[in-house]
Length: 75
Length: 222
Image 1 (cartoon, each protein chain N blue to C red):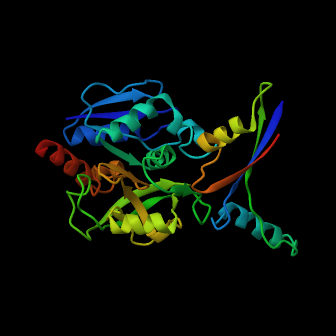
Image 2 (image 1 turned 180 degrees about the vertical axis):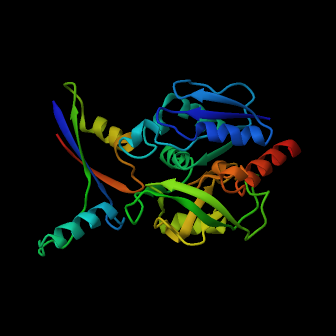
Image 3 (image 1 turned 45 degrees about the vertical axis):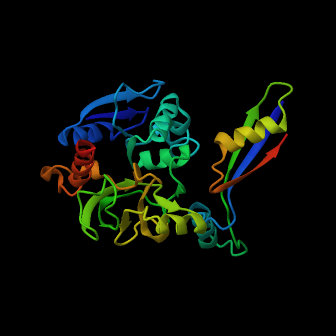
């Protein structure tokens, strides 16, 4: 089985990389872009029977730094 | 007095840190990240700068979960001293030994230059060698030194006088110009600047030497 974990900086935490991408898009003429947030997508190959709780534990212990990041799990 | 300097794949200030410890009179051993215990009788652990594990996932994230990290946390829990410049600071935040986190620099650029720091608190072994409000010139070299922390914890750090070093002019976006943070028991210091690179006049200044001297004197007095 597979799962995808999306890790994003929390709302309210300034994302300098997202801002730089937004500036670049704007400089290229994409005036419709009002905001950019950049995050990470982590794909996990998992043994059968792995539970969402297991993945939550992985996120809390390693995959996300919950001081600054939030995560979303898709199984 | 004994110091241990941890070495991770990608550490690049480990030998500088060892030279600084030895210069202040510490017998110093290097400890590889796969070790599960520190050598006997270690007074202070240095967690060096560099790019441990290639900064994969997040700066310091993998190092903070490495085998030696458990021994490091146990040493800190026992009241042992820990000095962690640059990537070391990132590792300690990831390990939960210090609050907050280090984000990408606000200007997105890697910054490598010597900057003035103000010594705001002198009540710790690391800062005993300085005068309050003394301005010292210390090199920085980092891409992710933009310290962030929630407001409530920041208030606590201020109230407990746990921010010993602030940038005179913040180069990286760090909240309130915070350059370094002490643990609650004041024996663990993480900071983005590199005092260990400012101990030899041939390298442009010795303002960092006071930190190692102060630490050595505190241990002798203890």
